[in-house]
Length: 210
Length: 210
Length: 210
Figure 1: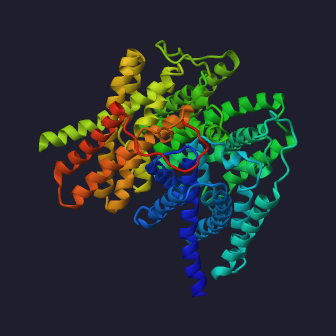
Figure 2: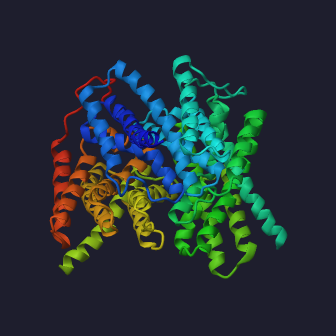
Figure 3: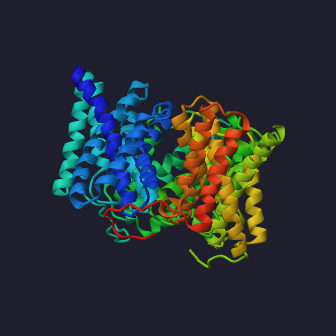
C-alpha cells in the first residue's frame, strides 16, 4: 500500500510537469524566450488545481511550496533543451493522457477529503484535469480542447466519476483512485489511438468544423 | 411578500438555466457533443456568480449544492433536444435579458447582505450579470459582449445601481429588487428591440467596426 | 522616509490608473462607449492584484475601498476626453513601464507581508504586474504581451526578484522596494527604447512570428 501511495505522490508531480511541458510546447510553437516558456509551463501546470482550490476554499496548493512551480520550470527547460520534434509531441500526447487521468482523480479526491459533496467533487476533478490546458490555449490564442471534437473533458468526467462512485461505495485506499485513473486513461487512449468521439449535435449549427 | 420571495428563488434558477442555455447554444453552433454542451452551459450559468463569490470571499454558491449545476445540465439537454433554430434564438435573447436583469440585482444583493460597501456591491452586480457570458465567449473564441456596440454591461450597471440606491434609501424587501430588475430589463429591451446604444468614442481608433 | 512611503502610496494609485488607461485605450481602438471604457479600465487596473489576493487568500484589495475602481474610471474618462493619439500612446507606454515596475514590487511586498514564502512572493509580483494586461488583451481579442517577443514578464520577474532578494538579505524599508522598482524599470526601458529581448527558442516551431 505504501508503494502505491508513494507512486501517487510522484504521479502528482509528474502530472504537473507533463502539463507544464505542454504549456512550454505552446510557447515553443511561437518561438518564445525561456521566461515565456516558464510562464506558460506554470500557468498550464498549476492552473486547473488553482481553480479547484479557489472554488473549494482551500489554500492554493503551490503558494507555500516551491516544488510545483519548480517542476513546471524544469519541464520548460527540458522542452527548451530537447526541442519540440514530432516524435516528442507524440510522447507528450500520451504523457498528457496520463496527467489528465491522474488529475481527474487527484482533483476529486482533494475535494472529497475537504468535505465537498460527491457531485461537486466530480466537477472539481474535471476542472483540475481540464482547466490548465484551457487557460494555456486561451492565452496562446489557440482553439482550446473544448473546441475540438476529440473527447477530453469526457475522459476526465469518467475518471472523476468512477473514482467518486467507487469511493461512495466504500472502495477506499488506492483502489478507487486506480479505478478512476484507469477508466480515464483507457477512454482517452481510445480517443488518441482510434479517434473515439461522442455523437455531434444533430441540429442546425453554423456548420463550422473546427 | 412570500409569493414574491418564492418568485425570486425561481428567477435565480431560471437565470442560471437561461445563461446555461446560451452557453449550450455556443456549443451547438460548432456542433459539439453533449459533454461539451454541459461544460459550456455550466461555465456560462455559474461563471459570473462564481467570480462574485470569490471576490467577496463567500463560499462559491454552487459547490455544496448540486441544483445549480443540474439546472445548467438540464438547459444543455433542452438545447440539444429542441435545437437551435432562429425562432428559439430570439426567445433566448429575451430570456437572457431577463436573466441578466435578475442577476444584476441578485449579485448586488448578495454582496450587500455580506457587508460589502454599496459602491462595490454595484460592481458585483455587474460582474455577476456579465462575466458568465464573457467567459463563454472567450472559451468559444467568439468576440464577447464587451466588443459589441449594443449595450449590455450598461443595462447591468443600471439594474445594480438602481437596486443599491433604492436599498440605501431604505426601500427594502422586494421593491428595491423589482426596481433594479425592471430598470435593467427595460433598458436591455430597448437595446434588443430598437438597437439602443451609447455614443461611441469620438476620437481616433483603428476604425474597426466589430 | 515618510516622503518615500507617501510616494509609494501615490505610486500604487498611479499604477492602477496607468494600467486602467491602457485598458481604456484597448476599448478606444475599437471605438466603444464610455461604460466599456470603464469596464476595460477596471479589469486591467485591478486584475493582476485581484488574482494575487485570491491566490494568497487575502481580502481582494478593492472590494471594501472604492478608490481603486474610481481611479480606473477617472483614467477611462481621461482617455475618452484626451483621445488616443500616437504621442499619447508613447507616453502611456512609458507610464505603463512605471506601473509594471511598481506593481512587481508591490505585489511581492504584499505577499511577503502576509507570510508567503519568498519564492512564491516573486511569482505574486510577476502575476500582479502582468495579469491585468493579459486579461485586457484576452478580453479585447488581441495577442497578449505573452505572445510578443519584446520582454515584459522578464522585467517584472527581475523587479520582484531583486526586491525579494534584497529583502531577504535584510535590506528593509523602502530601499529594497526602490531597488526592485529601478531594476524592473531599467530593463523595461531597454526593451522599449532599444528592443531588448531574450534569445528565442532555437528549436523547431511552427515558424510563426507574432
